[in-house]
Amino acid sequence: MIRVNRRRAAALAASACLPLAAGAVAPTAHADNRRFNSSVVENVYAIQRQADCENELNVSPQLLQAAEWHARDLMGNRGLFGDNGSDGSTPQQRAEAAGFRGTVAQTVAIHPALAISGIELINLWYYNPAYHAIMADCTHTKIGVWSENSLDRTVVVAVYGRPD
Image (cartoon, one colour):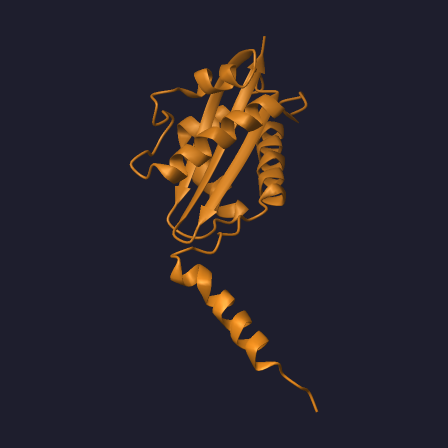
């Protein structure tokens, strides 16, 4: 038979309700999108191979940082839908602020759901002539991909770089 100390049980129950009474909200969990982001890099590399590119495509920490900044900006500012940030920044300005030296281009996907599959994303970009041209550009030898999710929105940003 298990003995329950009623005072202790009451104190534990009251303390468990305290955060709710104080209006605290449970922290939201953030998805680990590293595998998804890596698959985007691999798919862009495959598109470059289709375009007869012979260069390697490597992840740049600076472009990754620029992609993260813009993806988070797009998640937090739902009126944004393209390349410019809420502060008016361009992909080039964000890449330079992150320390990248060279010319950049960017592709963005905003999906009205919790997630987007890699196939959906690449099809979306592949059949957009401007985005396809960016992905198939053999001079883009550096890339950074970042994605963010919420229950009703997924944002994916890829920043492509041509180092100086």
